[in-house]
Length: 176
Image (cartoon, rainbow, N blue to C red; front, side, top):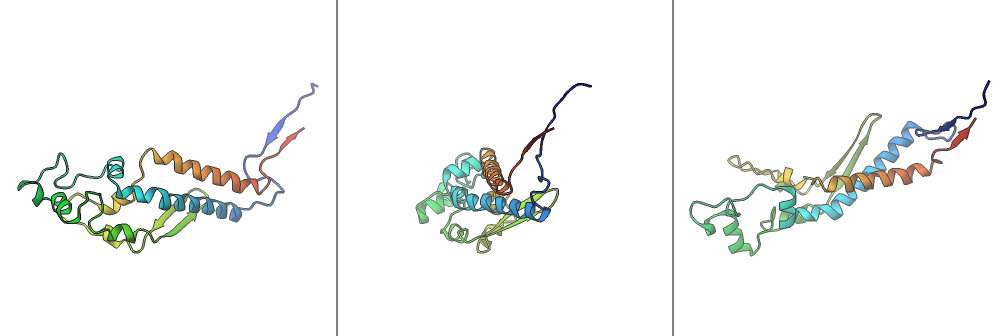
């Protein structure tokens, strides 16, 4: 019989270390809460800038380049906004929607097979108003995440989970 050694590394709950399913769900919810706070503080304001409108692929409004109006620029949405409000920022007419999105409630759910994050902005009801003759959906535009932001948000979640799981002792190696 030959001598051999086996290295066992635990990647899930470490036996005898005291992490339960409820603990794991609480840590997942905490990590998603950090992601929601980051989105709200760092990425939400980008939705109200011209660069954000291009990055998130907002549908062009009447008067935008490539979407002219039939009766001239100043009869279009962008023309009226430029003349009366002196700006061309997307999702902003008077600034009420931008101000309303500053309030938030972060809801997280964690199940054994999946988890979910939802950032609720209860005062931002204006984003739900839709013109029935238009394809523009301000609510969907406001909550869009670009492909470049996905790895950033995943990284925040992963770093948070690693830090949270280290509190439970992490993995250990046993040679037999």
